[in-house]
Image (cartoon, rainbow, N blue to C red):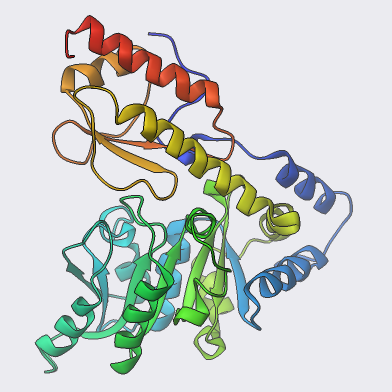
Length: 350
C-alpha cells in the first residue's frame, strides 16, 4: 500500500494555508498583552463584526467541541434540553460535552431529512410535555453545512428560528463549515445567520485553512454575559489568544475564507460528477458543500483502502464519506477516480 499525499477522509487532514501562517507570524513579531487583550484579537473581532454586519460579541476557543458545548451551556441550565437532528455533531461526535459543560442538560433528537432538522420538530418537543418531570426545551441547534453535506437555506433557517422564538427558545448554529455553506449560496454571512434568526453561532476556521481554533459569535449580546468566565473555567481562554484570533485576519481579509470554501466545494462537485457515472456507485445525498457520501461495493472500498486511500465508513453498509478541502488538487480527484475505475475493472464490477 502506498500512502497518498492528499486524502479525502476529512478536511481536518489538510494543512494550514499560507495566509494564515503569515498572520500568525505577524502576531509573533512583538510582545503583546495576554488573554485576548491584544491588538490582533481586537482586529479579528472588528473584522468579524464587519463581515457579519452586526455589533456582536466575539470569543475564540481552541476546538469545535468546546465551541458548541460552551455556547449551549451558556444558554442552558442543568434542567434544560436542546433540540437537534439525530445526525447532529453534538449528538454523535462530542462525547456528551454539551451536557457535561451545562451540568446535565439533555438533547432531544428528531429524525433528520437529508441531514436537516425538520422545523416541525421544534413544535413537537415543546408541546410533547410541559410538566416539571420533563427537561424543559431551551435551545435548538442546527449544523451548517450538515453532517450529510447538505446546506440549510435562508428560508429553512427562518422557519426553524420563527418556531424557536415563538416558544422562547434560542437558536444556535454549529458553523464548523459555515464558509462552505455560504460559498454554495448567493447570500451574505448576515443573511445566513442573524438576519435569518440565529442567536449564537460557532464560526469554524480549522476546516477551512486555519491551524486550530473556532470563533464564537453571540448576535444576542445579552446571552454573552459573563461568557469569558465560562471560557476561563473550561480551560478555553488562551493565554496567547492572539495566535488563534490572528488566523481569522488571514482568513477574512480579501475573503480568503470564501475562496477556500469555494475551491473545496468545486472539488467536491468534480469528484461527485466522476463517481456518479461509475457502475455500482451511488451518491447518497445531494452534494451541496464539500462532502460526498457514496455507496459502493465493499470489495471496491477495500481495493481503495489497499491503494492507500483513507475514508470513513459510517453511513450503512458500503457507505463512505469523502471530504474535499481548501487545497485539494484536481489531480488528486483524478487519481482517486482512476483507482476507482481500476478497481471496478479488476474486480469485474461493471
